[in-house]
Image (tube, rainbow, N blue to C red; front, side, top):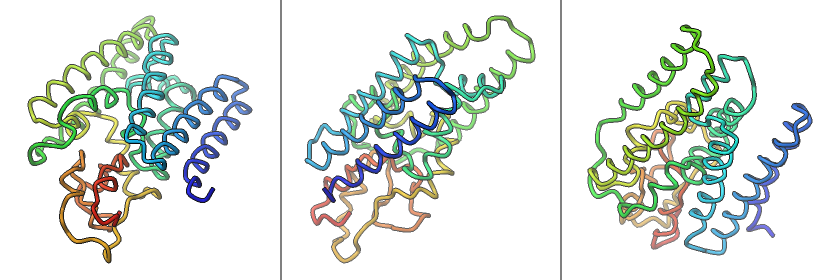
Length: 272
């Protein structure tokens, strides 16, 4: 059972969150929600251990579709960054605020950018595109994410300052329209730059939360220098252009690692 320790630990973490929120919020939904996500992630990790090449995609679909279709469209919860600001300004610790606290603010201290690799419903679609390995050098366009981040904050702030009525309904349509825009921009950038993850690298505002926290992540891929032959294959296949041969916290694009394990899967010497 030792080789299954990681999926077991992940399941325990999510079950602990599920039970804690269920009891403190007196809402059975949280028990179902986080148990489902924890089971999905643990299942995917088991598939990965069994060397199933679709392991990560299974988790992406299980979690991504659940959050997009059930939480977003059926339950009409804005799980985008606008929803986070909305609930935060209302002083309500539920829905998007809990999601962001666990998945995107404090969670990355444990599992880094795992959200981006295994649960993001935007990346879930973008990863179906043909450019899984970037075809060119990384662009210096990361500053756009900060404009998007500020724009989302200004948008929600303006609604509150103007005392606009029925903001909750506006938040739902912001979620729908925002996702359509994200998919459209993401697909266009993927083909323009021949890089499925171009949207994640340059546009996604969530990375403003994820990057600084991921710097201190406990879960990291490291290189066994004695086995490494410096072939560079791990860096070539990395969708986020991370230099996995450098074990320091300051490695190139280190806070971009989405734990997709492509580097480990393609390493000819099993050095990662």
